[in-house]
Image: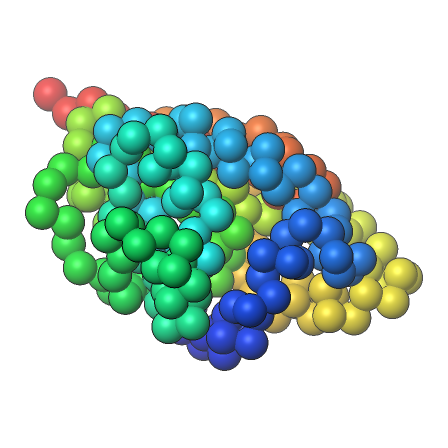
Length: 215
């Protein structure tokens, strides 16, 4: 993922699990229903799972609890340390959406939460092409991340953050590469996926992209 944001992860690592429970009012709406969202992503995972942006391992823990093998990828050293403390049995590697160790077996599901927005549009396209190559026939990508429904929704969300004095949130929304829904749909469809998305809170959409079956 966008390595330029590694400093943010390293500062956030020790307090991330606290943030997702709604302690920071600026990010309360971003993480509304956090546990439910993770459960839904985990439920949609099947077969051998590859997770990008493991973070502290909250989603990973739910997938491992299903008895599925997980190959974890995480660029931040502090985040990896926390995840390994929580889940010592996890196969966890240093890497990101674009540069990572290739798995030794076919992958059936690629998962990620709250991470894909770190990539620029060009980087997202490269990553989606890699996902297609990694996945077995009929494999799927299951992501949950901040996505704007359209231009109007993007402007409204930013205006509300400004009016509420949520300066950290507004800086985040302006600095990172949050896509609009149609943009993310096109990225997946032009790379050979069926795509569907459902909104899960004011910020976060769950999207599932299934690889076309190859003859």
